Length: 191
Length: 109
Image (cartoon, rainbow over all chains, first blue to last red; front, side):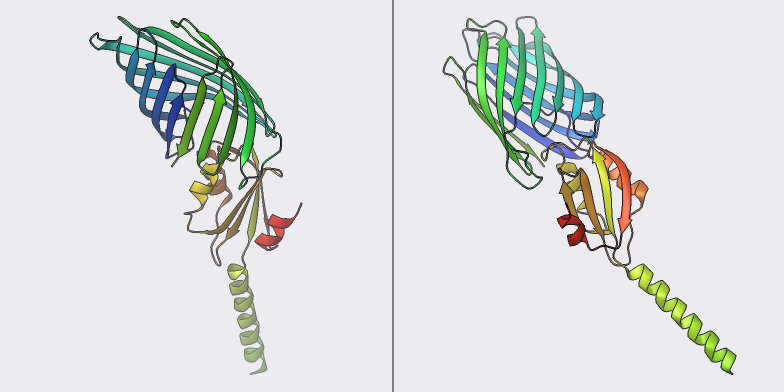
């Protein structure tokens, strides 16, 4: 789940994750091609890494096609990270996303890298989905999505997560369950 | 005298017609590219709903149309429509104006 840049003058708040990793972002799109905000991530394992930073996102390229939209986004954050019981140290996060979407098909590649003196993590995911019906603007949109996710530095670092996505108006909700039995929940709101 | 009456009536008629034209409510249909998801197209609603010249908005994903009803006596320019849709991250491709009622355009398939 991610919407790094929304429409001009929009705030987007994203919260979610799994028992292994939690993610929170709040961004303001000051134009239709860039957003600024805050980003926090926590990895729940033996290392218990945490990152917090101020982030800038760019919409590098958008293809507005007749029946589809494709995007390439880039993000960079500066902040601090720490490993359990250690002190905070300066950290950076870089982010890249590419997606392609029609009213029936959704594909996305998403990757985040966090680096500091002690912390080094990468979260990469590929998602493929389809909509069982073409929802109109005011209807509830439903999607069936398969997400493949890799988190570096974890014992069980690869997850296959079938999930359901719903959105209506400014509200977006995802729920899933990995094949290993871990739940996933994501919420996103534009305002 | 006859000439003065005729001239006065003609001027009055022209003024009435001009007034009627400015009072006519126009419906504007804009074909938009990239409008595939209602969550991503919320910006269209957010930006047009407070526009002083727009009274009604409809987004039709199937026909790739944004339908606007102009307020009586008001007008929104093609450039404003294009810019507003750009702010929403999408691309206006074709703008058409019609005297058909907003509800008729909205209901058409």
